[in-house]
Image 1 (cartoon, rainbow, N blue to C red):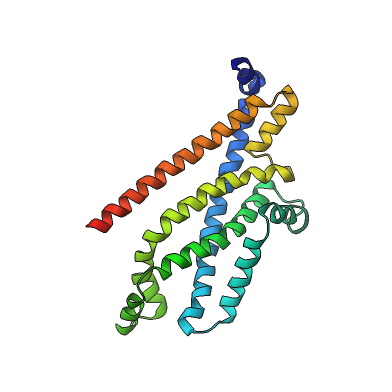
Image 2: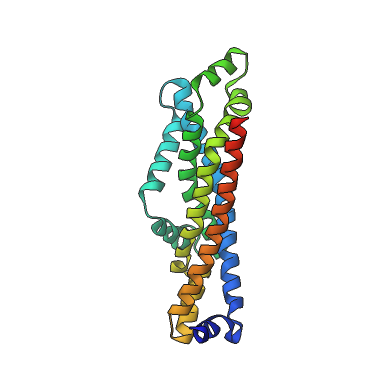
Length: 225
C-alpha cells in the first residue's frame, strides 16, 4: 500500500498535479458560492415581493421559474450545456464557477427565503409602523434576525457544493477528481489515487464542518444572552 501511495503521489512529483486540481476545486467552489449568495439573495427577495403585495408579481414568477428549472435538472446536464453550448471555448474556471454559482443560487434562494419567513411577521409590521420602508425594515430588522437561521444552512450548501465539483472532469476541467483519473491512467492502479483523493475531500469537508459547528455554537450562545 505504501508503495502504491508513493507511486501515485510522490513519484515524478505527481503531488503537484493534485495541488493544481485542488486549487481548481477550491477556486470554483469559492467563486460559485459568492455568485450563489449574491444571486440567491436577489431571487429570494424577488419571491418575497409576492408576499409583500399579497399576489404573484412578475419578479416572483421569474424567480420561481428559475428556481424550478435549476432544481429540476441535473447539475451535470447544466454543466455540459454551459461547457459545450453557452460558454464554448471559455476557460474551465469560468465555466465551472458560473455553472455551480447559478446552480447554487437556486438552493441559496430557498435557504434565505425560509430564513426570512422564520422571522415573526410582527417584526415587519412593527418596522413599517415606525415609518420605515420595506427595504429599510428588511435591511435593519428582518435580515439581522434571519441571518442566524440562514448561516448554518448556507454552510451546509457550501459543503455540498465542494463535493459536487467532482463532476467537473466530465467536461475535461482538471479538478481534483480528474487528476486522480489521469494518475490512474499513468500508473494503471486505481486504489491509491482514489483513496488519496477521497481523503483530501474528507479533510476539506471535515474542516468546513468543524467551522460550521463552531459558528452554530456561537449563534446558540448569542441567543441565550
